[in-house]
Structures are given as structure tokens and as C-alpha cells.
Length: 145
Image 1 (tube, rainbow, N blue to C red):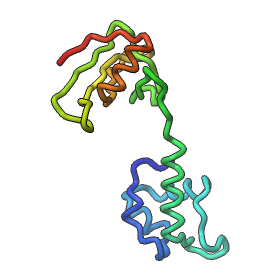
Image 2 (cartoon, helix red, strand yellow):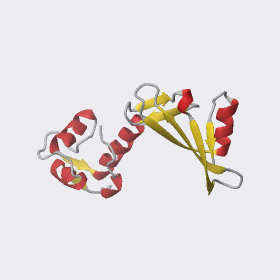
Image 3 (tube, rainbow, N blue to C red):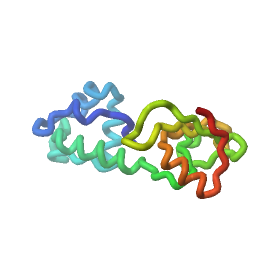
Image 4 (cartoon, rainbow, N blue to C red):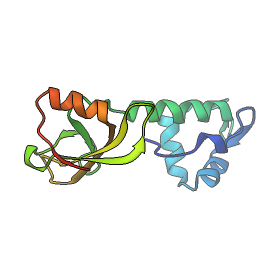
């Protein structure tokens, strides 16, 4: 699956060979061949070298990024080690309020925790409103200001 490849580097009305795609994104040619197997459409399957329209590359990259997204439920963090949503150990859950404003009536809050599976430190950017909702849901926090 493509990760963090900027579709803005591609011109949508231009065609690209696999080699040109590898040079633009600084990836291996096998990666682009794998993308082709995963659904990247070429202009003509019979003609070599394969040509791909820039619009198709952008579509493929955006769809792939969308498939990787995992929505978080209340009280969940994204664990970078497990690569999936996880809850924090309750005793390690803390909230740190900053001085930055978010809108007219809320401040920025960093909710910190530790993954219950792999013990990886977790961080969630949030607001005071969300923090109050989590408290009402029964979450216990060590609050720092």
C-alpha cells in the first residue's frame, strides 16, 4: 500500500511510465508494479512500457490513503506500534491543557496514555469540550495545566 506519497507532484493530464513514477516518488519499481496489481490502471495493457495517466495515479493514491484510515471511538488512541486503535491503561491516562485557543470558547488539550497491549506512549490532540465528554463517559484523568 502506498504511504505518504504526495499526489500534488503529479500532473493530472500527463501520462507517466512506471520508471517516471519511481523517480518522482523515490520508490522502487517493484512498488509501482505492486500498485498495478492492486488496481492502478494503465492506459493500454498491451503496450510496453506501461503508461499511466496522472489523474489515475492521484485517484489510486487517495483511495489507498482512505482505506488505511481507521476512525477512533471515544477514549481510543491510534497506536503507532500496533498500527490500530487502542485504549490506554487507565492509570496512565492524563490530560495537559495548553494556552492555545481552539475557537472562541475552548482550549487545546493533549491527552496522553500508554497502549494497553504494547505499552507504547500514546498522544491525542483534543479540546476541552472533548475532554469534558470523555470525563462524562467515565474516564479518569490526571489533569495538568
